[in-house]
Amino acid sequence: KAMSAQVGLFKSGDVYNLNDEINVDLAEQSLLNKLIRNNLVKSQNQVEVLQRDPNSPLFSVKTFEELRLKPQLLQGVYTMGFNRPSRIQENALPMMLAEPPQNLIAQSQSGTGKTAAFSLAMLSHVNPSNKWTQCLCIAPTYELAVQIGQVIEQMGKFYPEVKLTYAIRGNRVPRGTTIEEQIVIGTPGTVLDWSLKLKVFDPKKIRVFVLDEADDCQMLLLSATFEDSVWRFAERVIPDPNIIKLKREEETLDTIKQFYVVCKEKEDKFTALCNIYGSLTIAQAMIFCHTRKMAAWLSGQLSKEGHQVALLSGEMMVEQRASVIQRFREGKEKVLVTTNVCSRGIDVEQVSIVVNFDLPVDRDGNADNETYLHRIGRTGRFGKKGFAFNLVDSQESMDLINQIELHFDRKILKLDTDDLDELE
Ligand code: ADP
Image (cartoon, rainbow, N blue to C red; front, side, top):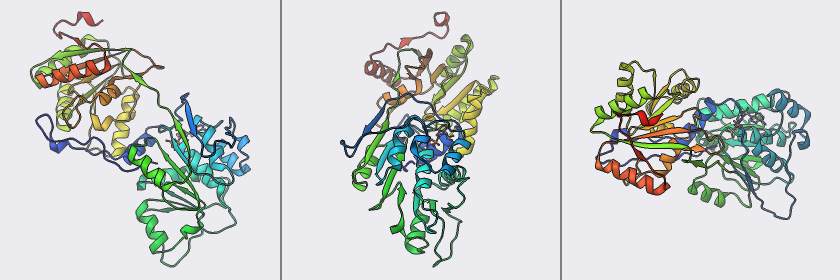
């Protein structure tokens, strides 16, 4: 579902602190998204389909009936509360279920129904009277493998002839036995052990392979993000794929009022922050810091002032992070202090105030425009108004403001926090 990669690599330098290097694993992000989401993310976004064979008719479905699923599977789908295919499923399912099997690369944001789609595809392709492994799905981590397995188990609830097992650490199988489960879901290392070393299933008999390399079988590769390196990998490994992409809605700065405040040092920034916060009848605010240390300090200060603060920090376990985000979403805390890396990929739509306690910079020390946009930008369709405050404490950070202004061609106004009448 996601490939391990490092994001948010920081270089040491005066503004940085090496101790705060946090490498957020994309797999962990994917898990986080699964933990904080239990509903389909509705998307009207455009779907792009690049077909391997442009002459074969493109077909998409609006109902699950049209897919001619086995009745047991249709029942499973409906019991899960799915009434109709999601946007990505409309196109992906016909391709995933087509005969002869076709390879597919699909990209759409997390929560849009990819897991459900390939789970259904695996269940559909199984021949239950064959007591050997026919479908293999490789997930990047133990936790994700378990999550995906649970979806398959739920969906296949009325189809008990089809069995599933987990090739994950701790799940031991004696060498020389051959497993009868038709579906194996696991992590790369254990799957390799099972297939090559212990030979508990025969990779040649795999008919559906979700994410990984193999020949002569259907390959489905799914992810919320595809970095260039992943595309290159996919193209090398997957011959003649169909490709489905769901475009992400563009974020814009048009509905955001942007300000900067000149401060001396962090205490001064803290005072400015309190002034801003006190003068607005605020719904919810997110505050971004550059380092964990700064985030911890700031949330401590804010709590002392009597604010209800949530802190999202890199050393937290993914479950902890999910619960912090969930609580904030429910409005249990009004302020969320976070470092950048922690908050990537998290959308909290109701937040109307974003404070850059530290400005986002890339590894060369230049303004990180993309992160800036992601922090404060809104999607046009949700077009809610918002405020962004940038706290500036040096010539370098002033330069960053200028770079950002130039990049987006949008004014960032100077704000005097001793006189905040102009805000409302
Ligand atoms: P992804 O793999 O893209 O992150 P999932 O397959 O995990 O997305 O789906 C996200 C959520 O939406 C899950 O809770 C899933 O049960 C639900 N879901 C998936 N497909 C549908 C559908 N067609 N109708 C309603 N809910 C769905």
